[in-house]
Image 1 (cartoon, rainbow, N blue to C red):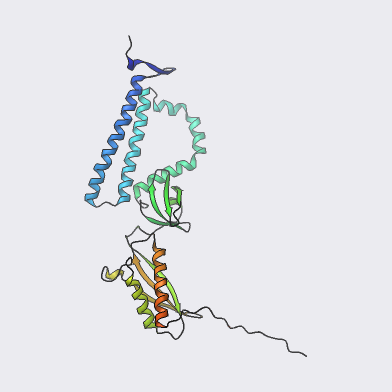
Image 2 (image 1 turned 60 degrees about the horizontal axis):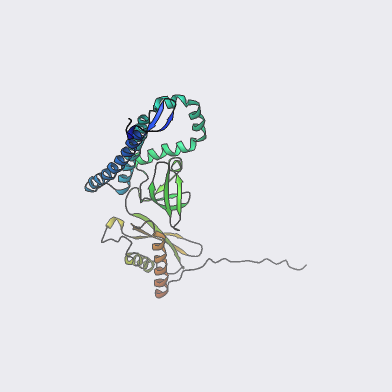
Length: 281
C-alpha cells in the first residue's frame, strides 16, 4: 500500500508530481525564507559594526537573495524531474522568440545587476534624472522606486541609470552645496549686503556653518554688474538635500525681510524706451 507521500498529484509523460515532492518543495521554500530572514539580520549587524552605508547593505543582500532564489527554482525543477538543461535545449526556438520580445526586460535586469554590484545608485540617494529630482527608495533587479519632491512615486527601469546621465547629489558626501541668487540696486552698500546674506545663512539650523565645518561655511560671491542690479550668489552646504528647496525659500524670506529693515532695495528690471515720431513735411 502506497503511503501518503507517494500519492500522485499530477503526471505527464515521464514526469510525476507526488505529495512527497510537493511537500519537499514547500519545506525548501519555507527553509530558504527563514534562512534569508536570519541571514539579513546577521549581515546587517556585521555591516553596522563596519560602518557600511544603508544602500550598500541593501544591494549586497538583494544580490544574495536573487542568487539564492534562482538556485531554489532550479533545485525545485530538478526535484520534480524536470532537468533544466533539457528544458533549455528543447525550448531554444521559443527562448529566441522570447528573447527578442523581452529584450528591454533583460536589459533592465542586467542593468540592475550592475547597479547593485557597483553601488553608484543606492537607497536614500538623492538624484536628478531627466530634470526630475527624487530620492531612491528601493533598487530592485528590474526597476527602482523614486520619490519625487511632490510626493509622487516613480517606477524607473534600471537601464535608464546606465545609458543616461544621472546627477547623484549624495554620491561623494552627505552634504552638498547649493546657492541662492539675489540682486540689489546700484548704490547699495555691498559689504552690508554680504554681511546680511551670511547672517541669514548662518541662522538657518539646517545649513552647515563655520563652527561645524570650516571648509563648508557659507560664503558670498559678487557675480556681476547687471543691467539693473548688482548680482550676488549666496552659497551654502546642507545635508538635507531632498528638501533643499524649502531651505532656499526660507533664505529668500529672511533676505527680503533683512533688506527691508536695512533699507536695501531689490530692483526690478528697467528699460529705457525711445519713441521716434515722423516729423510732418
